[in-house]
Length: 174
Image (cartoon, rainbow, N blue to C red; front, side, top):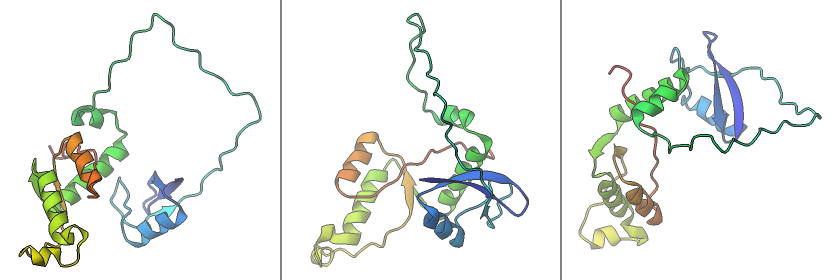
């Protein structure tokens, strides 16, 4: 992964992580990058200071004291996640939600079922002509979103069905 400082024509600075320099160039050329403050799609890399490691000894944090309170499991609720995210990240995730809601179909808690059916009817489970032999019409892939349990996500992955999870923050307007 590579970390870039980015800048829009209005002078807003923000950061981004990319697979490599080519990944940044592809996303920029494809119009996939936008300023989280003003929404401008004209994003360029800003001048960055190089990371320099000093030759001095590294400081090691002291271990926690035995009487320290035990750490409770993280609260992963959307409201808690939204509260601890930096404003810019929250803006990007809210914009992503808006785009998904505008361009994809909400299948609700039937997500795993619909993804599985769409995969089977678009590929025929890898057998040439399997969809036609079954008397079914091939279904072109489309964007869907919804809810699934961790077990359902695992089962989809085991079946070779590619799905992605994103943090689903509350809407910016609500």
